[in-house]
Image 1 (cartoon, rainbow, N blue to C red):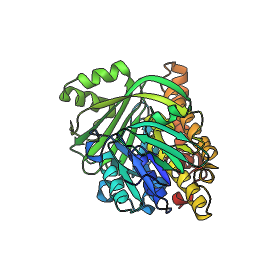
Image 2 (cartoon, rainbow, N blue to C red; image 1 turned 90 degrees about the vertical axis):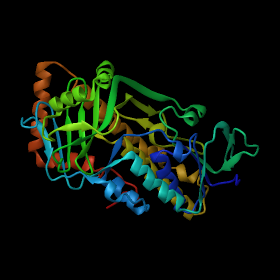
Image 3 (cartoon, rainbow, N blue to C red; image 1 turned 180 degrees about the horizontal axis):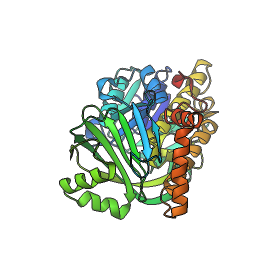
Image 4 (cartoon, rainbow, N blue to C red; image 1 turned 180 degrees about the vertical axis):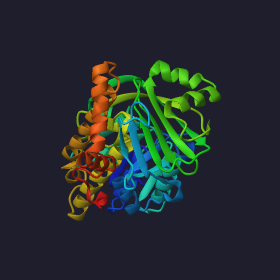
Length: 393
């Protein structure tokens, strides 16, 4: 087996595969290392919102989503009810992006990865040791005598990243004492491309459109409440869900089992170190209420790939020159989005009636102020701030 590459990338999740494809298209060789093969990945019933800027990047990388992606045509965030004036309604939201189930996104990324001749997947594999020096990085894998060497190591190995911890990079973390319940529902009435989010005291409930009369549910609440929701019968759960989101989808039923995971805010102290870049959940984890977790990871990919491409074209060391701007570029975006989602989650959990009235009034005011509303739409579409070239319109 080949042991020398330009890049070693740890983690074959959605962000990791995206990074492998983006970097390989700069002409560098990329080896992806993962504990599991693609056929051995756990069942994932989640779907992801792909912002307009992220969608452009995937299309330019040759990642074909096709009919598996559902356009977001309408968006509403509210607190009391859909009919109440306390809401933000983006009823011309045809440029926000799409929803796609993670399993189909993974398939599309894997097809793009396999279509490249300068990529290699090494799985299943277990890292036993890693180090770096002035010339590159070195990885030792269990059961393999010769180490892997490269100019750059990219860590996309999740929120509990082994590489991040081994590199001595600390994280700042907040436990929300909440969990997010995930499931896909089928319903008798069409969703018409509406992405709905209701803010409740325990946490937000999102109903997100998927192809056909189907929607993704992301319901965040206190840990005990989510545990209870998982234990209800399907019929009782659907009754409770309909009560919370309204009956605009008609009769609903579960298409997939209910899953849940704990919610935290976690941001690494820095996103790069000598010959190392952190991307995706290895660098940052935010609350899902804005649907921007994957998009943040894809912007990591775009920024990192741009630096690598520039270094490669100039004949420079990608493990050094490719990282020059990465940490600074990604810090502002990540920390701002983390602060926004953290503040929103806290604000809608406050029970004070005076504060509650101010909060509802703020929603109504934003909805009636076109310039401010437009900024919110641009942010949701991933169009604000300095974007890497591959994401430009």
